[in-house]
Length: 148
Image 1 (spheres, one colour):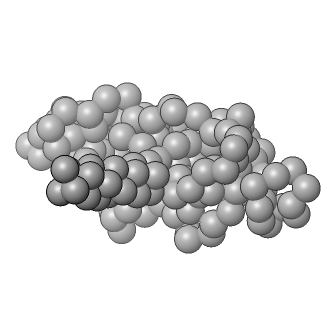
Image 2 (cartoon, one colour; image 1 turned 180 degrees about the horizontal axis):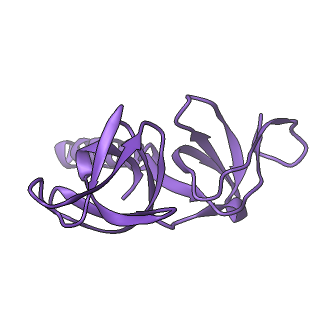
């Protein structure tokens, strides 16, 4: 009986910690989003994001606030009403080719610089269909960082 209690205690403790620390990406819902120093509206604003759909990594939560890290390693707290599940990603390579179809042998449409923001339409295997300003095409998934 003692072994069973120890096993279940360890199992619950292990699952509880791993579930609570799960990290995931969300995107900014609006053109202007405040990043705060703490998880309330009483905490001062650290910086203001001015890019809708920018992907951010959620690393913690406190009531209606989420602690995030952005692509430049800025961290702070954002209210959940300012976050979205819309799929978007940043190009994490110096140069990435956007192709017409999900194949390296397809016609290249454009060359994307590092940090370019893409709206992600769908992903298949190693490729994602993306949209950015004037181009809609396919890019290799390994070149993207964000909510896929």
